[in-house]
Length: 144
Image (tube, rainbow, N blue to C red; front, side, top):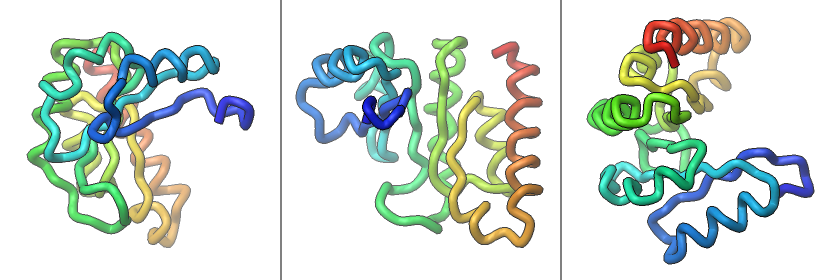
């Protein structure tokens, strides 16, 4: 991945036994480290590894296929991360679109992944601009 120019490598923590080792190998390859949490995983599952990461990705759907419904009950994870790690990049992925972006940004996410909401939009540029504007507005409010 690093040879292809990737600068951030995010992996799900659940199947990985040696998270610190994988983080170290990613850094040695010259990339930033992202740790992803599936909805069933709690903050306690990633807490001991947060200092090894540049990004924590909170999944708001079960990974594997697009178009799933956004799980609002994942936002307390984002809030906890933002409160306890104000400078950490916090990403949200899954069901993020015009109807859910406010929940993400107000909880403290400063990075988002949006697939179906953009791909299925008649004006993709407008949707992207609106999502970006919402997140940037919240970032300024949080001083992130």
